[in-house]
Length: 152
Image (cartoon, rainbow, N blue to C red):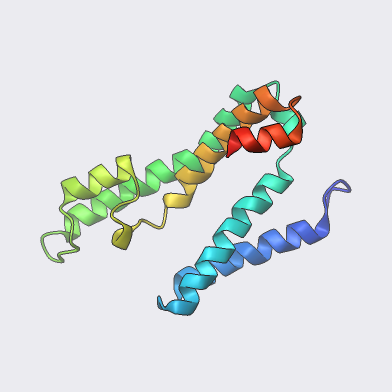
């Protein structure tokens, strides 16, 4: 483990990631809904806490390309695979959306709220990182309180 890393944050990130998997694996009920509202934001917040602002501030393009490869390429490939599978299964199993509707939601968003794709976080994380990088690049010298007001 890198000496500059904080072990409790790494452990907390691991616990939140496992919690996300568990919450998405159990039957939806009131408890899973409450847990989802906690573990997913915790994972995003912990990513932000461990993001190295100074490292990427002057080379945003390289960071965006790297995050595109690690987040958006899997999103695109998995979405295309899901679309192919969905198209083959649609005549046999009605899942509430036509293949054209499904394709629309893969591009536009993750789908109607009752059918949100499990891949939503890849795209959300990518765009959150890009927005965060831009905010940090242009506002890093601004007083903290002013940054918070601008972000809100």
